[in-house]
Length: 213
Image (cartoon, rainbow, N blue to C red; front, side, top):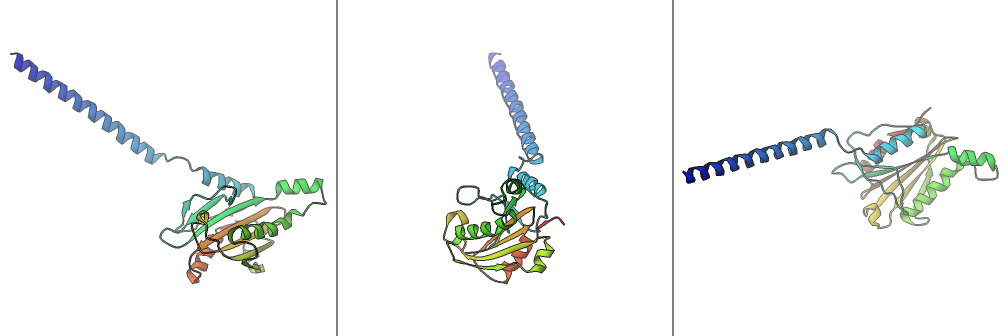
């Protein structure tokens, strides 16, 4: 009789353990499903969209691109970054509003005109990527400016320094677009091969941003 009771207790104990395990696994599956349905908020993306709105810029996500983390340190500080998965291409975006600069300029007319700051910002960014004077600079054509509702802009073709921050990319095209009394858009497109496909991807990446009319 004692043997039968002992066997019954063992069976009961095993059944309880199985029920507890089943409950735990069910809770884990529920938690995983909840995590899938409610992803962690993307702070970089939300901050970028807020900045876009505040600076009267329109952003349209270029097809086929995926978000990556933009650098934000003492060497390079950008607001948003995208890549083409499986391809040799990445782009970093930076948006600078002129609102605070214009407020200071009104109080101190002897300071630099905020509408001209984009020029120095472009040169400084180009130098940080490739060293002083190691880039080719040209003005953005008027037709391109008009298409982006911009008043001025420049492009810089860069041969990059070999840096871990830029993932050891060899080349980049840096583009600045400026709208008077509004702000500046900076886009840096990276590659290891300067060919037709690179400039095609540059168009896709840079056409995704433009100022509101």
